[in-house]
Image 1 (cartoon, one colour):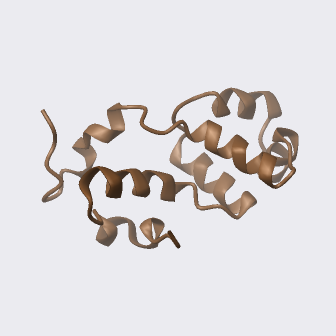
Image 2 (cartoon, one colour):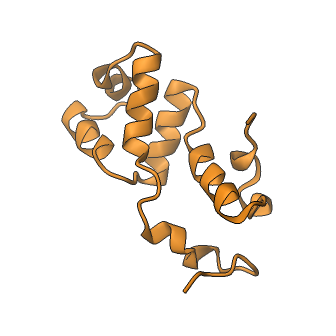
Image 3 (cartoon, one colour):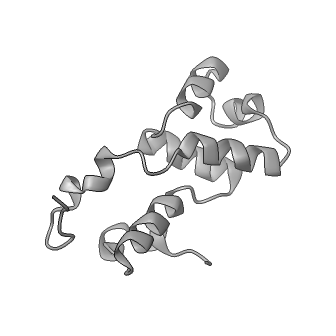
Length: 106
């Protein structure tokens, strides 16, 4: 059954249980566009390269790590999740909770 996106049920979003985005793939795509390597990114965020490589194979990444990657690469990777929410529900959801994270130029 689909969850309603009303009230404070943000922590119960069905979207968190489904791999709707492979964020590791998105990060790799942007690394290629910027002509940068996983080694470069690992150095930028002060992370072991083999650990980062493992993380990028996952559908999801810890928020703190995703934030550090977003900062280092100059890309708001959180916007991918916001885009999916907007597509799925055809409206802006929870911007009052996550503020500018969902404001994209698209």
